[in-house]
Length: 344
Ligand code: UD1
Image (cartoon, rainbow, N blue to C red; front, top):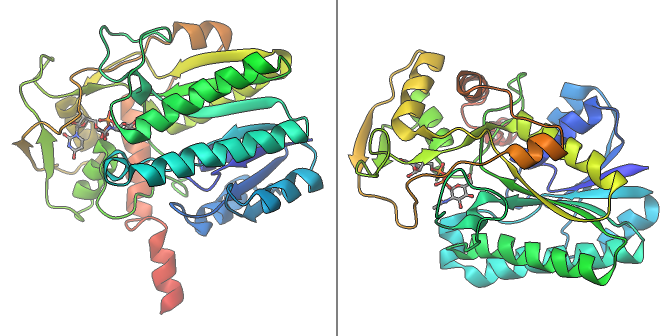
């Protein structure tokens, strides 16, 4: 019996694949490399030294996806695959709605056909929109403010409806806060294409000298130092949360929703100074206008995941920065350097 991981070459998918293999699970990974790199697949094998199956395919290719279910005895699915750039989703909403929602529908239809009723879904804290209070609990009101976030919110609703219609489903919806860090080996990590949108990859590219300086978006938020506050979580803690969620749905039916965060908020300036200590490099920065759509403060109430999944995010912010830095130094151009080597 195997666990199917969609989007397993991506940032969170690859770290989860490693944790599953280390925990003794059999896995099958599918990925179309639309925003990931084959090198990540190779490195999952290198880190774990364990065998697994990989298919390069698009979830919307119903026939080929069905072949995977026909060929392997799939016990449960962890569904990471999807487009995730907020800015791009505003420019290309149809692409986001089509890809994220249609691929999930195809996947769920095939799961139902093959009687695989266990699903862990990769959602995001972005579904909360602008939170009324912090820390954010799972029953806070939802209101994603961009097409990317709305695809996550809509898929959550689809999964809820599906489980209502058929009590065989056991589904865990995981709302991630801000995943950062990398595997200790420095072999897999976040590999943004082009100029990063998110804070941590941006900081680390400034530290390594690829970008000149960081723009700090907003200095007048009602926070400890005027800059935005987020709940940064180590990607390996997050990956381990998936295993706990998987263990729980193996025993339970219905839908459960969990916040995966640390429960602590840190400001942009706190992140800069911690990264400076971890890397020994200076991070030049300048204050800039607020980024449209940004909120002041966002951090999780993690009690439900602590209690029901027996999980907590234990890695601290220094470790998150050190691990990011190790990955960044060892792979200054992410996985894309491999392509350059091959081309030469
Ligand atoms: C962003 C997405 C969110 C997604 C999350 C995933 C937006 C508007 N939101 O959230 O939907 O779920 O990533 O990780 O893109 N910052 C800077 N300078 C930068 C980049 C960021 O000052 O160059 C600040 C931001 O204003 C924010 C903090 O750093 O206060 C974190 O930003 P980011 O890493 O982009 O994450 P989110 O805004 O939380």
